[in-house]
Length: 255
Ligand code: A2H
Image 1: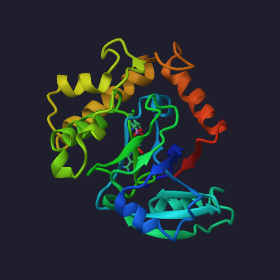
Image 2 (image 1 turned 90 degrees about the horizontal axis):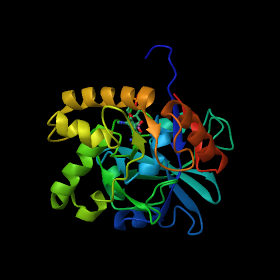
Image 3 (image 1 turned 90 degrees about the vertical axis):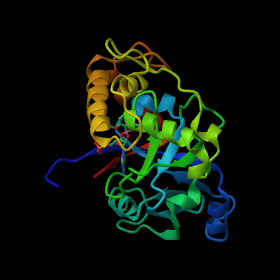
Image 4 (image 1 turned 30 degrees about the horizontal axis):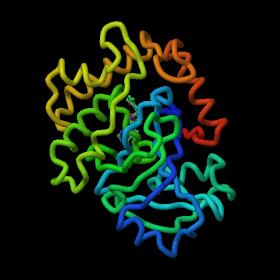
């Protein structure tokens, strides 16, 4: 793995309403008055205005971990272990697991997405390419700026029945949040169209699109939504991150 450290922002997406299976599994394990947070790890905190859903790997294993009587976290075991050495849990090195679940169990769960234009919450949806070796194995979906996210929600909307979801869960409005000189204000959809990417299985082109979108956004992009509208992405990134941390909606997570 080498010596570089990846600095993620872990965003706290509070559960508003569990999926049927999720509800059965947490019953008796999490107190009814406690909050459970899905915990996506992102490198693009400045894009959180554009969240339209949140992904889990349907076949991956997850846990719910207790922080306090009123606060629980949903993520991979590996991430919880790392967090136990980053002062996320009260006792150093300890990450109390109260429930084990599979990603597929929680598909359909409604969660709050901090800063998102979608104030009524967004759904947990399946994404096959989520790796359990990286981040928290939870990925928040920003289809305006992530080609992977855009390709996935398009696929989910196309084959909603096959994926066992409601089509409208994958069709929340995509709002422009970053303007770039060469890709316009919806960089990911523009690249997916330009490169004729048809599905999330076009991994090679998606990797290339991701690279282009990331560079263009970071070096040339400026925010066109929210409190820091007008600021370059390179500057807004830290401002939005700090705001999320100050409001208690996120924390730093390194691995
Ligand atoms: B990013 P790196 Cl708008 N499996 O957040 C697959 N992908 C994962 C993951 C996992 N276990 N954990 C995190 N990620 C995604 C936003 C975003 C992201 C945008 C544009 C690009 C982008 C919204 N999704 O990432 O391999 C998360 O998606 C492109 C680099 O650790 C996270 O940031 O460098 C990013 O990949 C972490 O990637």
